[in-house]
View 1: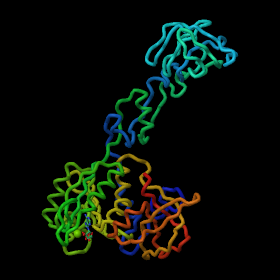
View 2: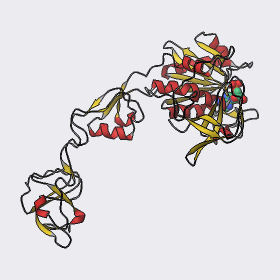
View 3: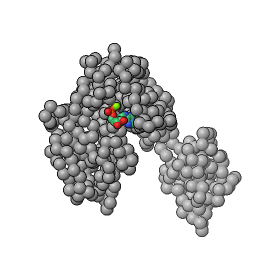
View 4: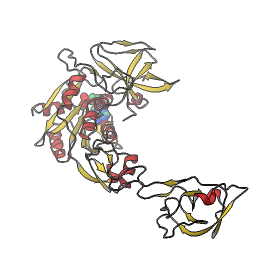
Length: 426
Ligand code: AMP
Ligand code: MG
């Protein structure tokens, strides 16, 4: 994760560091992950399992292939009948049956005969090999064969892929198209998986207007709502958005209470700094179950985390600046979502890259500088975004990575190696 220093690593080898009264990134991360466990498994249709983590071992009730079948469209033959056959010296055989896929021939193949057969059709009794149709004239009721067949040629054997009783997928497997293909092939229409957490995303700020709404002077479009909801979906969650909520204590409280029933996790943005109208902090710090503090990072200093309501629903209160909100989500919220999903690997991959430009970093803070990671001549290069301000969405959108500058480092020189968190890889 963010602290990893090794190329390709995801581990988190650094001991927690305390930076004054401010919490370190490591401390905060450990604290938000504490006690988070995968959501209780549910039984879902196979297509709904895409991207989910399997919560059971799946055993094959039958072998794969489940019967000997042809790997080619062609003719089932006895090898001796076509020995030495060639374009110059073809062999002619009687075609005694024709088996499409989905049918079984009742004929037994005897000397001097062939059976036309399609890919996937069961191998008829007495067959020793298949001659592909390309090596024949495709004839009926006689076929001219231009090539020999080795014993077993183009026959797919029962169980050669998966044996009956094999465990084809273990609990913890991430289900994608390839694993879903296998589950379907062994007859599983449903699977037990950890469900996707339902994440409610709520933007707060009296200056915010729902996307597409008319803007008066002083108002801005809510970009955090869509951004954090998209990030939650990308992390594997189901996201519900609540339109922008005004900086007014009763309104914020009521909006949060409304959402508790459908949330496994709540993420708010805005209202957690030291401003006069920082309502989220004002309202929730009174309740005692949400802790507000500063984390030694840039961007994203003010962070709040805790639980709400009778089910102790976890809540993150992220800062309002759009880049701070997004980076905070990546660093703290995403690993929590991934753990709820049952992933054993909850962090983004970290690679080492050469920084192509000088980069300054605040002392005693871990900086997550936005950058564009590329590969040149097999080496990772990362170019810091031109604008590093925590309001700069234009600059953010042109990047695909976070350059992680450790707390003690205040300057990275062009050409020096840096740890880079890849945002385009799960
Ligand atoms: P706050 O954390 O509420 O003090 O907000 C810090 C800055 O982020 C202010 O400039 C806000 O206007 C801006 N901001 C807060 N919430 C959002 C949002 N949902 N979308 C875009 N900008 C926001
Ligand atoms: Mg605000």
